[in-house]
Length: 174
Length: 456
Image (cartoon, rainbow over all chains, first blue to last red):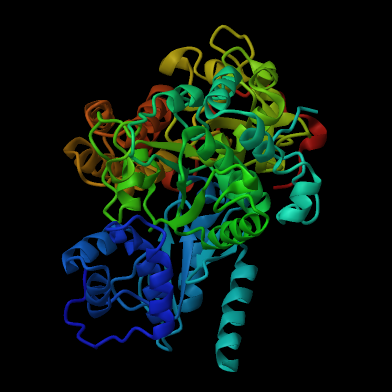
């Protein structure tokens, strides 16, 4: 669902726009809409989610209608239409990972973070959700964290605890 | 030891760099193709090799290439399908992570053969690390003169770009992938026209899987005839198999097609048997979309002959007693796994991933998930099992793209082979919540060796 009440204006930095310019060059003249998915990834990496004002600005940049951006952002699972925690733990919940304990890992994360799937922790640091197959079935259970989409494989309850603690500490240092 | 064409140098330190890749004979195929062969000759070699699409459909790659329309003055495109999302499949991620130049080299040779001057590698968005690896490899190749203008002084120009997806299984379907690459929702197109006539931006386009494109490199180097000598019958060459589930050594293995399934599961060269000394209950041999088979039918045909890892052998017996090689996503289930639960899990996946264009798939996948959830959680009735059968029948063959079939087959095969386990969930609703049906009569013909038994 789009968060339409979000009216916080968004400014794209010149560094971000330079990246946009670079990407648009990959496609033939007049086919700049092809850049939409990569651009939305860049926007999300910068702002943590794809808000309506940010999507409007992308539409303006690509010279397309806003609805063409909304319909794409809402079709694909990677774009967050609502604000999320700074670190979103996305755990694979599909068959092969479940054969080796993914469900237990999700239960553990829920307990450890104290929030349900999709919710944000009070300090704003963490969200978690189950996602479909991440193509790492031989190394399951696995989880990924955007915007770099770093992978964590062969998860155990201990390794998940360690990961969450490390991320907390990393954030304190910043 | 089986021959390795793609993963031969996987353990060489630095093989992800251009320098080491070239030391091991990399980019020979580019030199040979661009300097000594015509595009038609390369297409001919690929035809002779018998290479079949490694993404799952198994359509002959050379034939697909020969369908490409070549109207004057219209650009042609090669698009690599790296939207690897079929549950159980992780071979393309592995290849791109460790030997990115194998894909880049294949893309250059294949683009030349097809007359494409701009090519795209569409990588699923979750694979951002692999996207960075590929982009670095492309930069290296460009700096060495293998990409860009006038490659190796031959007058051939090629620009290669990596495109991220947005997280949608459906974009592995080639026309959905092209829609996505055009910046749209991934709704599959009605065919015809096929991409070979009207693909990306309405221009003639070939879409090939990562592994298929990488396999073009050894085919050009050694010739299509040499490649065709490996394998068995119409299943030529080697295949990457992604092995997951309850195995001692899950991972990606390159096999010569024709390897006995039993050897693949139990030999130390490959998966090393079932983990924790347990027995095999069932397998999904080619990614979540192909029919699930009980252990006895996985290892042997209904007539008792051994089953092999090949397109033909895995589908021997049709859907009654066989399955498919698919994308090579081999999932093993041990005796403690519940078939109903896994089928529910897969149904949830297809419901989640249905693009919503065709009613039978959009609605049917949801109904299958609901009914399976009900049975798995102890609220099912015997009629539900028949209803489930009825729903899957109404999806299969009634949709624009194969996602409908892919959603129906796992359900159909689970009921076909494991109906007693479904009925047990209905008859023993309480018991089924705390225990599993177990191995039952899906007998694993391989006896458990005493020394393999360990405490779980």
